[in-house]
Amino acid sequence: MNSPLTTHDALIFAMVMVSAVDNSMNDKELERIGQLVDFLPVFKDFEKAELIPVSKRCADMLAGPEGLDITLETIRDTLPPRLFDTAYALAVEVASVDLEIRPEEIRMLQLLRDRLSLDKLTCAAIERSAIARYRKA
Image (tube, rainbow, N blue to C red; front, side):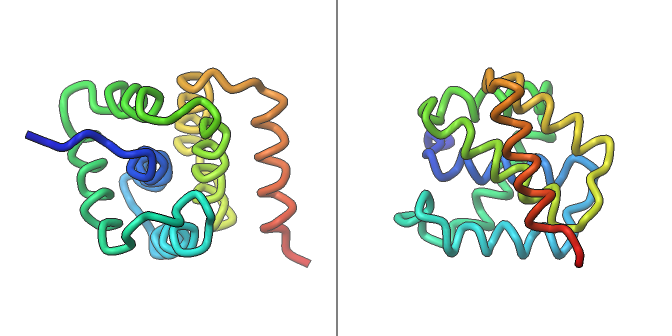
């Protein structure tokens, strides 16, 4: 039997979902997930060695019957509401890192936003900040 998801697991699931939505998790996205886990305060007590097993658990859940819906519900049910915008911000960060957001990634972000009941203004601010961070000179 699988152990219950932790808050850290749910945040990682949000990042992995966006990375995997186009059926390929590229090196830039994987590297960015690792960087975020390394330096963000929300992951302070997370054991980095667990990143690969947690990512695999997410991939397994996504591959199962109704995997997308179940994974989104699991994220929503695991996270405290105060971290809903954090999960969305992490997902946007991973989608943005390769400087090309594909339609599948946009759709995944919409699904995550809707499942977490985030308002459009908050999401727009998060998205705009990612554009500013990744803009080339």
